[in-house]
Every structure is written in C-alpha cells, then in structure tokens.
Length: 223
Image 1 (tube, rainbow, N blue to C red):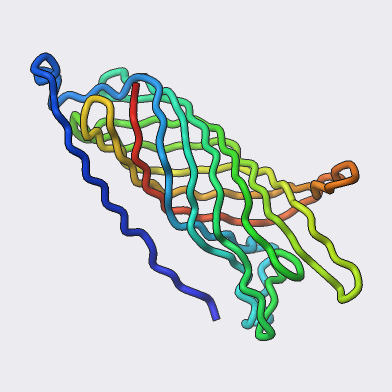
Image 2: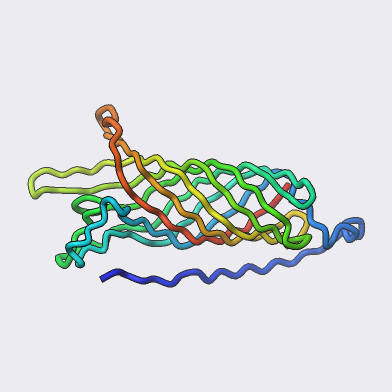
C-alpha cells in the first residue's frame, strides 16, 4: 500500500532595522548579486515507469524523507526579468523501511539510503510584484544512493552514483534588501548510473529509471 506523507511547516521571523538612506529603496527590490541559502523540504524517490512493478501491490518502490542542504547562486535583475545560475549540495533522510511484507524492487534488494545530491543549473524569472519573483529552473543533478544488499552469504555495501536532469518552479520573496525566502517544487529524472566501489574501479555505466520529487523552502541572504 502506497505511503502518503504530508510535510512542510516552516516559519521564519526576522527583525529588520532599516537605515534612513535605504528607506528610499523599499518597495522596489533588486534581485541582482550573489546569494547563499539554507534549504529544507520533502523528498521522495520512486521507480520510474519502465521499472515500476505493477504486479506485486506489496511493493512500495519509493523512499521518502526530509531533504536539507545549502545553495549558492548569482542573479542579474534586468528590470522585469531576472536570470541567474545556481548550485546546491543537499542530503536526505529518505531510506527503505524493509519488512517481510514487501521489497523495494525498484531499488534492489535490501536497504537503500538517499545520499548526497549535487545540482548545477540556471533559472529565469519574472517579477510578479516589486518584491516577488516567479521563476522556472533547470539543470544537471548527480545523486548518490547508498545500497546495502545481501543474498544471505555475501553482502554488498556500495554507493550508486546517478546522473540526471532537473526541472523546477518556485516563488522568491524579498523580505529586505539582502534577505529572501523561497518555496519551490522540482522534479528530477535519473537515467544513468555507476557503482562506486570502495576498493575497485567504478563499474561501467548502466541504465536506470528513477524519478525524484521535492517540495522545498529556503531562506537566504543576497550580497
């Protein structure tokens, strides 16, 4: 039976003391410059359509949990349009909850943990209001899954590095000249992978079919 989780309650309170000279700029935010942010949200990885098991309804074939990390970026505000580049390093608590009632065949036998996720990409947005930006994004993602598998005699404890692409959309609100908050949905598709052996060269690349969905919130600073 598929597991349903409802997550995301995040609140942030800030006190801002504005300098008199900066008061003239209020109401017309400039999204230009480098930025850093802290990210947290809901993360789920699922077997894709070509590897989904529709025969055994006991197989959940998904892992979900809390995603957290940091991001950096640089944006250029061209008036009504903002363009930028960005990168992230995140991790996740998502892992299999293996039981006698089912097996996560989309990820292999045994235990699977979602590991670090590297992302680099670009975004473009339009100002909905002077301090609110609606944007879309896309880029490259390299996610790691930590796999522990056994056949009763031999044990495999290795990392699988996966390559894929990511698309997303979100809203960014400028709380002040240098503080902002964001909410974002993104979808990632992983189609190639390799086993990252600890004591041997990495395996040849092989095809996979894994989908990833994330709903995240961020708070950050622009310099």
